Image 1 (spheres, rainbow, N blue to C red):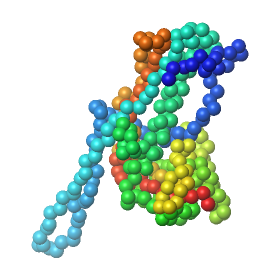
Image 2 (cartoon, rainbow, N blue to C red; image 1 turned 180 degrees about the vertical axis):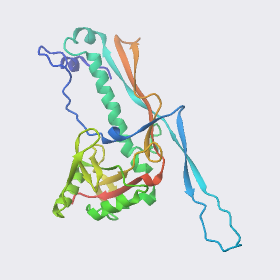
Image 3 (cartoon, rainbow, N blue to C red; image 1 turned 120 degrees about the vertical axis):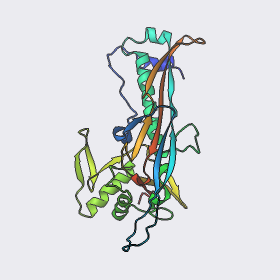
Image 4 (tube, helix red, strand yellow; image 1 turned 60 degrees about the horizontal axis):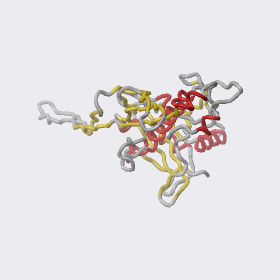
Length: 296
């Protein structure tokens, strides 16, 4: 949709205001920590071990048996994420006295792209949107899931510990949850006379930790999930990030701003934001999910 004259007037005022004051401020922790692999082509193939060959003890002179490990090959395909920002030439010429209308719309479109990516990282499902990619909810295998009850239940510290133990190869890098669940986790720690671990992350932000694991709340983790007959439920994900054997982002070229230029059918210019991107879980045990958390 093109920028309207009414909306452009909000960006052209007599008083100097450099930049747009954001009213839609959302937490996107995954984008802060997710490593990315540059993919050549439109997909990324990787191999996971399925079974080990096994080992045995043998007697002197005994017959040795041969065993071979088996593997599963998986493919993560890049998806096309983006959007267009159109600005009328009259608006750009006459109402950019304070803020460049085209630059503002381009920046906000980039925000849309980032928001859509973060949402898809958590709840993406190619079964619902074939043009998208699968997120954490879909990537978590059955063996890596636990629940707070058949129809949902209250969060408990024992459940959080069980979730952490499901992740193999070291502790998770992050516990990802909604803000509602983070509040509950804090209250459980206080009630159990356990101090709430605080510290600085790699970006210098003051954040919460649980058992030395970074706790992050995402505005894109919903609190309206269902399980059995339960509703208004949420999930916690334990995640290991790694471009070698964990959760990793895939991209070809990064986010691009393409100047489409002047349009033929109207007196406007267009900028296209595009990102060839996807997500891959290189090892199933690098991700675990605790689902069915209610608000009690």
